[in-house]
Image 1 (cartoon, rainbow, N blue to C red):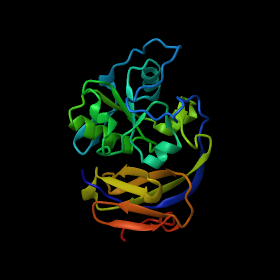
Image 2: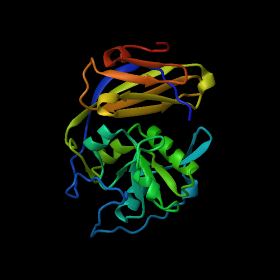
Image 3: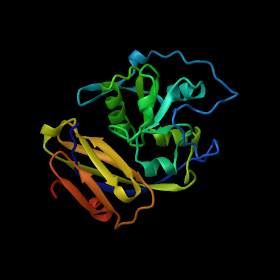
Length: 251
């Protein structure tokens, strides 16, 4: 897959994480991706998955599932869940039962590799669906037949106080809006941003006019924290304060 980057920041805001609504005794870390067993199973929702909006990820159509649908699947244990973010973000807070399978291609000994190709898989991230759609596209290309992403993303899941676990589930995470511009020839390609020491990552797609925008929901950063940006044309490693001070188009 192609990569790309650019930036502009509109400042920092604080996002409060919802409280943990449960755990499995090990921080919620699993390999099968299934939610924990529940005594309260809702009725199934009448859903036409063929009617879901789809996002094009470099030629692969990825279906965006409404969050209330994925939560119904979750409570009925009718889907496996995969967190497409960095390991640091996963450890801080993730959907209870979800496996860590980072975008775009997973990790060494990725748990998803052992899941049956026909099983329903729901990927998610916090941007709200850039990293997750990249991971989902890779799975679809690998032959998985029933893959979706949560349209509204992980932070909406937290806002609704759906089950989540993690080491800092009750802490707040600062958000930093970054935007930029590149040659429109790169429309549809991916911009990546990462804080490598803590393995926190984000992504965005380049729009038709060459612009892009993403919000970093990263915890534990300072103005001096170095963020790596990747675009199809160049890489840039710079302090957060510089990257949130205006539009960046060249290193």
